[in-house]
Image (cartoon, rainbow, N blue to C red; front, side):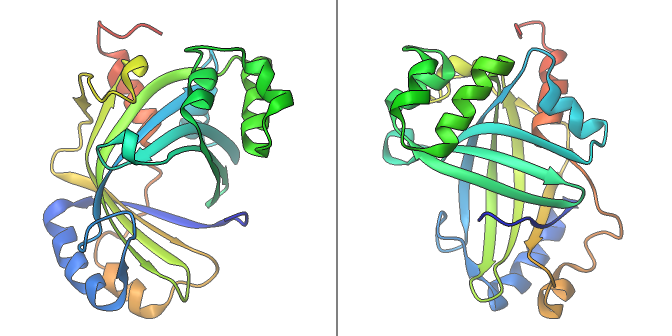
Length: 239
């Protein structure tokens, strides 16, 4: 997806989403990443500069901002593609650029081995080359892990995507990202999760009606920004 699209976010109680889920299951398809109910886990490793610009630009309401992350789905990184993603925001619009990377590229980008400058010359992936140049220019490095359970539905005709994320946790042991052996700190959301609706130009009425009674107010909740806040309260986090 190269074009910007709308992204609406709402704080939503899990019990309330069960009602929405029942509605959506009749009009949308379960996401291909998940099981027959559209359920799966998401694991993201976020990068930032020494000033945590990516985190605080969101809180400051910057009209244009972006962040990099490496992500895999499910609970088996060896059996799931590793994805490099650049998430861009422009006002209330967003887009995501992504590509698959190898374990060797992962190790170089995270600083575990190799020389990131080599990727400028030897990779054929534009996003990897772009990220490598920003690592060299701005000092991007792994800062936090964000894990959560997701339920997702899609409409392949209108390209609408509705997701609900719950059990959102943060972790500071970025070196263990692909091992999964790290302590997770829950984000303080009580029994709430994050409902997101992504669409291109017009949200069809049958989908709008399905989510209309969730909340009257959109939210700008950022998992990464809130993860940084939680981790800053931990005496074990070194950054």
